[in-house]
Structure formats: structure tokens, C-alpha cells
Length: 459
Image (tube, rainbow, N blue to C red; front, side, top):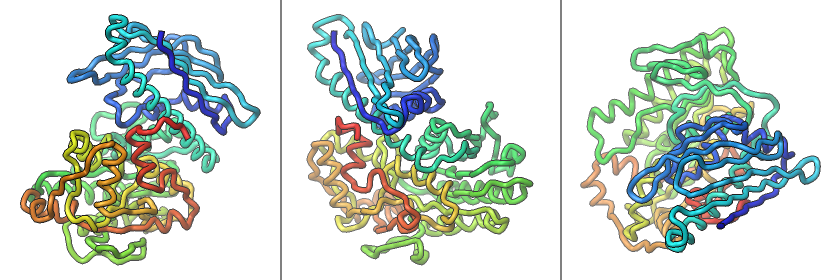
């Protein structure tokens, strides 16, 4: 019977690591972003609790139902397949103390392939390779998440998040929940417990649910990605940011017990196309471009919060790296079939940030009282497009032979290409670094290997 064991030393007591796994959001945090896995129902880890996930197999999908058994408070739980791709699957999670302030995290899996030896011989290497990569990823997440919570957490927080179903918002929400914080999601549908309704287009918001919060993180906005921008698309991009930000900032300003901080997303598009110029938060607004104008108005719309003495942070996001969304998600299929390569000019700068550093940076910002105004959310090592595409190819072990020249991009995508793809922005996270933030993934190769799962090391 095939087995797999992964173990890592975690600098936190066994009961603390166990509690992290018990909380809402843990299964989502542990799901690798490159895997074709969607959590449909997380459940708990107590005896009899179930988790339901949908996994991609070949061209189709399969429901995988796991039931938890063997629960020992602070030490162990086991998930056993009820329905799914294996003939048998039993995954034991163990937490063995290693002194008072550390433990060994052990994942031990025993499984059997369906249809016996013929299938095992056909898929064994691929399945076991995937499992090794996934457990290494899971252990890194546990290790790094707990480090951040230990560094900053002094008490449980109440945090409202807009855009909580987006790439950054969902990851932030699960991170906060596994740390024992309460998250209030602002949603446009009928709210469930733990949610508040808002409709920026109609100027409606459940303000009473925002009383007494510690922080609000505003990430909602129309997706800017499109093959071409129509006038209607541009209108939606702008209005979604202005309407939502204005409604939120003005509502918070009127509260009897407002939050200490509003972190309102923006973007490094604020700086425009600046070539190789090193840009900090003190650099002036760019001179031209639709995205630059949007960033300027977006930040201005949040001013009512600052005027009401709420600490305001404009989080100028760089290109967030994750195979689950954004630019990297678009690029990966092309690179995987060997057709990847340089997009636009080889010397234009791309200011990127790993998804985990984006959420850890937001958490740092919540706790850092002297951090306000514009803050660049970019890694300290921006790279040229030539370096970026070569590194993606290197990590994926694929060639990087092709080039899509700038004139062709302008012909295909017009203004969208000019503003989004062909802009060179070399931003530095000066204020994050000045306030003591330590990047988990400061270098591109490490960030890509973590996000794409091309490492079997947990640290």
C-alpha cells in the first residue's frame, strides 16, 4: 500500500498549531493555488465532521468527500475518504510537542489506487509527486502564517473586508480567520451570518454592522483585465472604485465607533509609465493614462475617512503573483505548452508581489499605527520583463522563445495594452520596509516556486 509522510518543525506549541487547523479558513489556506481543487464545504475536524472538495481529473471534475475521525484534542485528527478518486485514503494529521514552544507537524497518508496495480503503475509517479509538492506547500503556509500571527497578534481583531471573494480578499479572509480574528464580509447578495450587505451603485450599506471594528480592508472593484477596453468597461472600472470607496469612507466617517484604520486598495498604476526610474511613495502622480487617472481618483475618494481621523492607508498594489488569478494565471497555460516568452519590451519593469506577501503586508499595516498614506505593495526586487519571463520558463522547465512585440499588442488591445501591459513601473516598498515588514518572498524565483509548487521543501 502506498504511503507518504511529511514532517516539519514548527516554532509554535502543538496546541497552537492544532487550533490553527480547527478554525474556519484552514482548509482553504492549505489548498495549493496551482491545484485544480475547490473547497465546497470545509466543515470542522471533530469526530464525524466532513469536508467536500471538487477536484479536477483530466478534462472533468469529481467530488471528494472526507470524514474526520480519530480526533484527539491538541494532538491528532484523521480524514478518511467516503467518496472520491482513491480506492482507500486515510490521512492522519499529528502534532507532536517539541519542547514548550515548538512542535513537529506530521502528515501521514495511506492510500490505494482504484482498479489496483494497472492504475498504480500508470499514475504512481505523478500522484506521489503532486502529493509531495502539496504537503511541502501546506507546511510552508502553516509555518509562515503562524510566524505572522505570533509577530503581530496581541488580541483578536474584528475586520471588515470588501472584495472578500477576490484573489487577495479571499486569501486575506482565510488568513485572518485561521488566526482567530473575526471577519465581516461586505457582500452584494443577501447576507449570511458574518456578512454585511452593501450596494455601492445604489448607495446602500448596513452601517450598523460596521460599528466597533478594528479595521476595514477595501479591495472591491471591477476587474481591469480585458482584451480591449470599451467605453462601458472603462466606466465600470472607474465607477466601481469611486462609488464603493466613497460610500465606505463616508459611512465610516459617520460612525459613533469607527475603525482605527481603513486600508483602501489602489495600484502602482498611479505612477504611470516611468521607465527605469526608481519609484517610492513620495514619487509624483504619473502624467498620462486611464489607469493613472483611476488610481488618483480612487485614492481621493477615500479622503473622508482620513478627515474623520481614521488612519487611512492607500495600498498601491503591484502585480500579485498567483496561479489562481491575475496576470500569472493568464500566462501559465501558454508557458506550459512551450509557447511562452517576452511580452512587450524586454527592458520594461514589472513590480510584482507574491500573494502571501500581499496579505501579510495588509496584516502588518493593520497593526502598524504609524503607517498611513500611500504604501507600495511590491516586492523589493522588481525585474524587467525579460528577467520575469525567463524565470517563469525556468521554474516551469519550459522554453521562453517567443516575443509578442509592442506594436502587435497595441494593435490587439489598444489602450488596455498601453496602460496595463506595456507600462514600465519600478516601484519600491519603502514604507513597508521602513516600518519593519519582512518579506516572505523577496525574490522572484522563490515566490514563483512557492506559488507554483515547484519545491518539495517546507521551509
